[in-house]
Each structure stands twice: as structure tokens, then as C-alpha cells.
Amino acid sequence: MFRKPDNLKFFLNVGGKDLVEDLKNYDKIVRRQDKRFAPRKRTNLPWQSPGMVKQVIPYERGVRFACDSGWVELQWIAVDCVRVRLRVQDAAFAAPFSYAVSKVDWPVVPFEIIDSEDAVEVFSASLTCRVDKHSFRLGFERRVDRRLVCADMGGIQWRDDGAVRLSLGLKAGETSYGMGERAAGLNLRGKRLTLWNTDNPKYERYSDPLYYNVPLYLGVHNDIVHAIFWDNSSRGVVDIGAARPDELIFESEWGELRYYLFAAQDVNTVLARYTELTGRIKLPPLWALGYQQSRFSYYPQKSVLELAVTLRHRGIPCDVIYLDMHYMDNFQTFTWNRERFPDLRRMVADLHAGGFKVMAVLTPGIKADPEYRVYKSGVAHDVFVKYPDGTPVEGVAWPGVCHFPDFTNPTTRAWWGDQCHRILELGVDGLSNSMSEPALLTPFDPTTLPDYGRHNQDGLGGDHLENHNVYGMLMGQSSSEALERHR
Image (cartoon, rainbow, N blue to C red; front, side, top):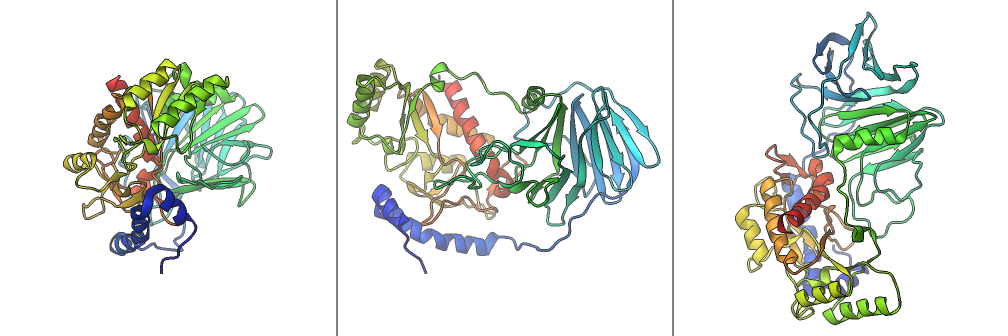
């Protein structure tokens, strides 16, 4: 039975009766689709390990190990960076696909191998990897003085349901940083954190998860700094000494076990190599680093202009004013409300004359309305995330029942850019992506698309479980490319 919480009053005030009815009915949609498509989860499956090394296979860029229960590849990306991959079913180490990795062409790194009865040691100019042949545990050392960088505890592991896991040791006194947006202090030692981008509007200190995660662990111990980039976008967790004070665990529910280890004497060198791999931000315009005025929401047009006059009159520094969803017609993306904003183009020009830049909010949910131009275009171009039966996934956002663009599809990214042109031609200076976790509304807390929603994944095909954490990044890429294309 539907329970009416206080949230419904808020939704009623903002979105009206139709939104409230959609929220009430959405639970029925979820139960029906879960019954059809949600897989049964297997429980109590044991973690497995590669086991004993049976064969050592050097190749141009590294070494592959055939083990009792799988194959592991070590590839030198640079003298101070190693990529580790696991294959369970076969040894077909094709070039990996990752939305997070920008640079894929690296020079060949010279390395040496010493293969003894109990261990294999692989050396680059600055880093040594020691592989225990009996347990397949890895240990990384600085070559110059053989000091330990990090070493496996439980090591590489997987389960028959597709989950993968990495267990490393934590040194006493090692400080732990990274992991994206977190409601905690900088040192994350002792924390267990979720790898799942989540709209959490009521978060407090130590709330978890939040809006975006970055699965990069940065460990600092005296003059030895190392990082682990867990290149798996599925839902997961990272345990930084919470279960055991001396153990670091990365765990994901699905996908290839693939991680990069970086090591150097200082943080800057490690991060420079990491950003060489994953890409570096373009230099933003100076105004984007200035004072920004944003709330939910400034409207109508007269109020926005009055705000600008008040800021200047009172000498309050402000470089940017945001237009949140109330500038839209019924919260529908790529529209504007002509009653609230009768001359949006003129308003933007007036704000420019006053020294302001203007940002317009975009949300991914496209209202499932056959009369809505953007929706009709999306259907015609086949751009939406789908259920396994090929029909578009439904979810409730501010306009009501919506379908959601599949930004893992190159066609969708180009289509989104074409839609952005309709907003950019009004003269706005930038686009602010919102609810791109992606977030769906419910009468209780925000949720997201179902794990079994199907994505194009640049032609590879995949579920939302493994594409959720890249959804906002790819929406951002699509909007950024639109700015470059239409400016």
C-alpha cells in the first residue's frame, strides 16, 4: 500500500498533481518490470583466486601468467605504472575498453624478467613487481632501494556471479586519500565507501554515497607515494582499513578485474601520470572560476533581472547567474516557459550588458509525451536506455514519466548536441548538467535506472549496472562537445 510521506507535499507544490500521480504509480511500474527482468542473485558464493602459476609468457609490453584458475596480465604502461588484468574463461587479452582511459598508445617500456623456482620478478627502470608462483600474490617495490610500495594481501579474486575483488595490504602510518566526492575528511583511512553515483539531497557528514565517485586510491607513506586506479565502472565498494586496519579492498559486482598501479616519491608525480592516462581538464574560462549565483530557482524573468540589479547595487561580487529548471516549460529539457520568460534571449543580453554570464540547467529525463518535440526526435533516433525487451526504460523526473538518453551510444551523444543548440542559440554561456547520476524521483529518496536497463556501450552492449557510474560523465561530454560545436 502506498504510504504518503511529507515529500509529496513538496512535489505537489513544485510539480503539481500530475507529478504526484506519476510518483504514486511508479512503484507499480518498478515491481512489474523487476518481476520480468531482474535476475535472481546467487548468494554465499566463495571468492576464488588464480592459484599456482603454471606458465610464464613474456611478450613485448609485459608478462602473462597461466595459472590453475585463470590468466593474469601485467603490462608496463610507463616505468612507474603497471596495469594488471584478470581473465577467467580464456586468455584472450584484447585491448580493454574503458570510458575512463584517455591515452591508449604508450611507448614500449624496457623491462627484465628473472624467473626462479618460487617467484618471478619483473623490473622496469624504476619499479619491480614480484610474483609468488605458489599463491599468485604480487608485491611492488622501488627498484632503486627495494623498498616496498604495496603488496597483495588476499590479492586478485573473483566469484562465479561475475564479481571481482582486489585485496592489498595497508602499511602502518599510511594516509589514504582520493575516491571522489566524499562527506568526510581528506584522510579516508578506516572508511568503507560505496562506488555508485547517487543523488543524496539530504546528506550530512559521513553520508555515503554522494554524487560522484572516482575509484582512485592515493596512499602516502613517508617518501613513497602510490595510487591504485580501479578501472571498473560497475557498482562496488572500497574498504580502506574498515574491516581490517591493515587491508585495502576494491570490489565490484561485475566486469573485468583491471587496475593500474602508480608509484613515485611525491603526489604530484603520481597524479601527473594518472592524468596522463585518464586525461586532463581543459583550461576553463576565467569567469567559470568566479562567483556563481544559483538556487532552485530564480523566476520569472523580472525576478532574474531584479536579482542582477540588486547584486550590483549592493556591491556583491557575482560573475554568473544560473537558470534552474523553472525557466523550462513544465520542466521539459530544451524548452523554455514563455509566460515566465517572455523574451529569454533579450534577458540574457541584458545580463551580459551587466557583466554577468548565464548558465542554463539541463536534465536528462525526456518526458514521454508524443506531443513533445524532443521526445518525438529521441524516439525517431532511437536514443533511449531500454529494457531487455527493447522498450524504453521508464522513470519519474520533474516533468513526469520520462525516458532517458543512452549516452553510451555515439548516436545519442550527437543527438544531444543537436538539441543543445536550441538553448545555446539564446546566448547562454554554458550548460549545467543536473540529475545526471542519473537520478529518478520517488516519494521517498531519489533512485536510479534499474540494473538491467540496456545500454549501447559504444557497440559492445551492457547493463546499467556497469554503465551507471559513467552516465553523468558521458552526459557532460555530450554537453561539452555541443558547446564546442555550436560556438
